[in-house]
Length: 162
Image (cartoon, rainbow, N blue to C red; front, side):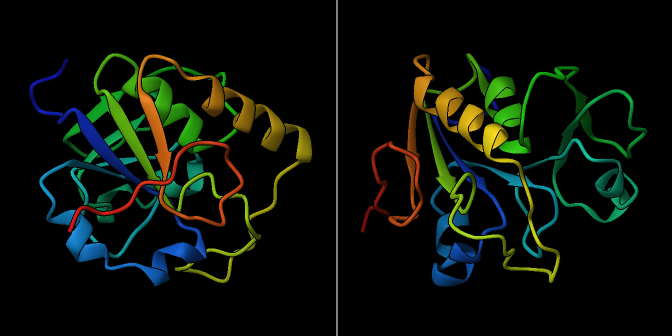
């Protein structure tokens, strides 16, 4: 295990579910936090694979996890895996062996095509979605949870400890 990464990690996506929760409460639970692409709040790490996000790397908060094809500001970690359908799949592959439990918060919900923080429509092909779901549901080296009860992944729901 990496001593800088807690056994439980929180992975923040951009689904509209993010608007329904207390982000700052979650960020202050003491777990290592990961953001996928762009967020208005700071996470410990931020992961992306798309060139359009790489162009905004200076404004991203947290240590960047991306592919070496992108030139980014420090601190960063390069992880050259190109077998994924979505950034959440890429990040879960990087987390292999680094944590015991990953909580998906507005990530891999596959509920609609909206993002909480932009008008950009999230479009994907059904076969990519199916492969991603199959990949996530088959992960055995860490426990995977979702926070969004409406998310379609067949994984346990994680409730915030009171």
